Image 1 (cartoon, rainbow, N blue to C red):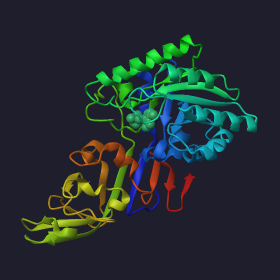
Image 2 (cartoon, protein in one colour; image 1 turned 180 degrees about the vertical axis):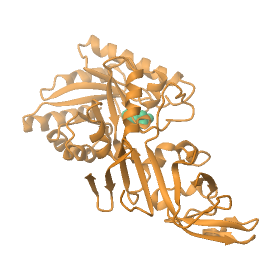
Image 3 (cartoon, rainbow, N blue to C red; image 1 turned 135 degrees about the vertical axis):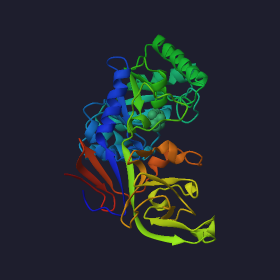
Image 4 (cartoon, protein in one colour; image 1 turned 60 degrees about the vertical axis):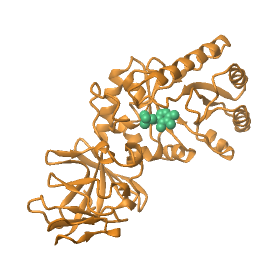
Length: 392
Ligand SMILES: *Cc1c(COP(=O)(O)O)cnc(C)c1O
């Protein structure tokens, strides 16, 4: 391993593969898998992750055109779908790179059709249906169906897919998700009666997959659970032995003893009630440590849980090491992951704070290099400072 001493993240590529395999096993045969790698693969690195799993997934989904083009630059040839809207002046580029757009207005479809015509290409798109999220998508109405019919007749467009998105499939009460599914189904029936039958129908996100909602369509969209993180604490994952792929480490840079009555860090929000041993670690909110975890979170040092004391700073944080035997400057600090039989999961890390799992993993900053492991071996690094992914 390179000598990253300050802070680094490790990504267990086999855990991601395992999570995909576990998911595939739970689904009907021939179910297509779309791996969601938006936001740089939820902070795990979209390129190394996609390269590792490209042969066992069908689609990749991204949120921006640039994210999709980046995958193409790195040799990904799988179909890529953009799940959000892109600016009109980007349609041409998306066609050139054969990246599918989510379409939900007639205007958008007309423009894509024109651009594709000029390029002499026929482009696949997916129609987005809004069954309750109220973010993007056609409402499931007769008027929408008429527009979709019009789109289906456009010369340079192939409606390859159609999808909807659940807003609350990660809650214990699944009533709304089932209602959304039912609205989507009725709308598909309406389209079918008008002769429109897209080849790939998809609805389920991670939570819906686990809860078996929308899992009899043609494809599922797997995000957070692919990375081994729970969609929420209301989702029962006992049948899915998901393994977290990400772990984060830092280092003790300084240790000292303070006296009762002394305060720690900005704003003096922590005051020592007794003499204590404290350590400074090289990880702060500029690395993606939510500042809201100040005086709440903890790290693991030599397997011992150490509370964060005082405010998290930009680049450093102070922890209580009074209970850690033989603690030394240079010792490894586990921010996220395992240490001598103890572990911190993203759920534990973000519990009782005003952040949540998705936000935490997406928010790990580019200052933190990602090191990639496969079969326990170091196989690559994503060093954002030089912005290079180097295969070993
Ligand atoms: C991000 C996203 C997903 C993935 O959601 P997870 O909860 O991470 O599985 C699926 N579908 C759409 C439309 C999304 O935007």
